[in-house]
Length: 174
Image 1 (tube, rainbow, N blue to C red):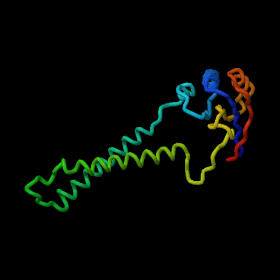
Image 2 (image 1 turned 135 degrees about the horizontal axis):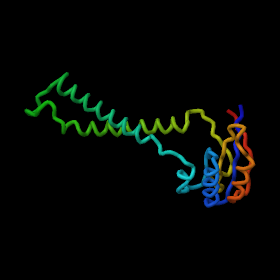
Image 3 (image 1 turned 90 degrees about the vertical axis):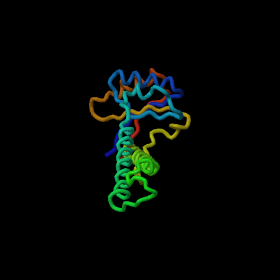
Image 4 (image 1 turned 180 degrees about the horizontal axis):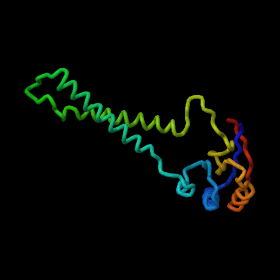
């Protein structure tokens, strides 16, 4: 099953921003935008929601913190209590370094895995190349042709009016 995409190529960021705003205002869902450098405001223009990856980071950090504290409490107080200089067995200050390290480790690993999972960057994944020059010196706006109600002529017209020098259909395999 081949998927069809409509790719508009632009020479500058102003045309891309204008095209994305016009397409979004007309009800088109922008599949992706490829740029050689970050273009501020494109996320809002595309109507993208904020990422939920920070919540994954927070949850994993809290799990790391809780597991570190529980493990240290279990070892120092419950399983193998030692009298070290008359200090209390539950010496919370001694637990801080390991708790911090496990919090950072769990949060970092979970963030990396969540990012790779969300972006579908699995080992052996094939890259989707819409334009060979995209991210080199060309700005590309990609629309996915999903159903029969997709008006390719309207989308092509909006992109050309916004400054696209080329608009073409690209087919990619599964």
